[in-house]
Length: 163
Image 1 (cartoon, one colour):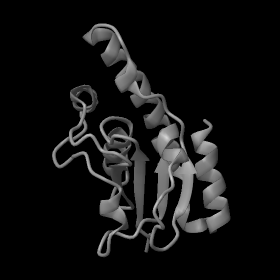
Image 2 (tube, one colour; image 1 turned 90 degrees about the vertical axis):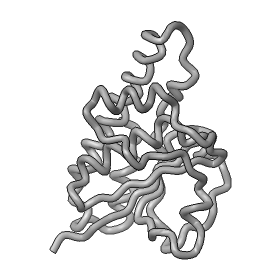
Image 3 (cartoon, rainbow, N blue to C red; image 1 turned 180 degrees about the horizontal axis):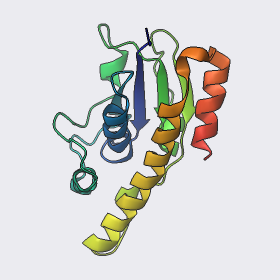
């Protein structure tokens, strides 16, 4: 029987990068992986260009929402196996103590919400970030997690973040 793993993607506002990662893993995880996302200081809404990017990639957006990381450190929250930060602010934040002491890693990805220009230029920035996250999610979902010890899994997930 294959084990199931929970992942939490963290960024500052939980409006773009972490939402993209959540949607990609949940689509590709095939029940083996379940992803969640949260923000250090959630903005309360998903960036409309994030939703457009996911829709263009034919990924479901139903149920996605901007939420605080406090939701995942509270009693009764799903136990995380991996916590991955996707922005520098979240990587540098003092994180809660996660129950079960999950494997942590950082995947530095630029914030597409900072893009300037018209809608086409901003959408191109979102598409570029989506491609970066997509590549890392493809690598992550290919890992034989059941066969890796904790240290090897951490090294593999950190290496993906440098890819």
